[in-house]
Image (cartoon, rainbow, N blue to C red; front, side, top):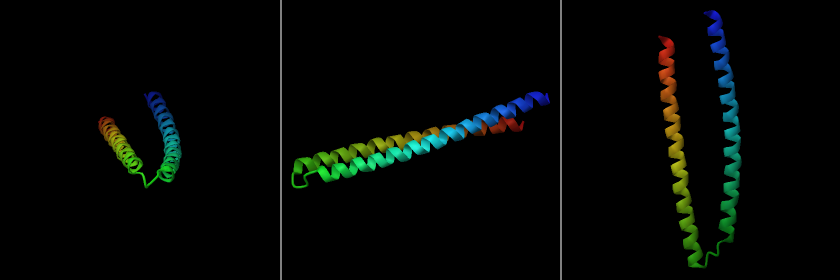
Length: 97
């Protein structure tokens, strides 16, 4: 029985290591994407002819639409985190039995 528990502990350790590695990669990708987005926003701000009301209106619509998408992605991330937390809570409760 101890052999099975040792193998399960090793498997859990490997899974946790892969999860941490994946999280580091995700953090790096989010940082790079954020820098790219800031660069694109600065370029848009510099390229808009602020005297032309049509361009200003299009820029405003673009920004508002973009923020709606960003807020949707943040809501999705919160949902996934909450769901994962619930699953981990159930697994921890079962492990204690």
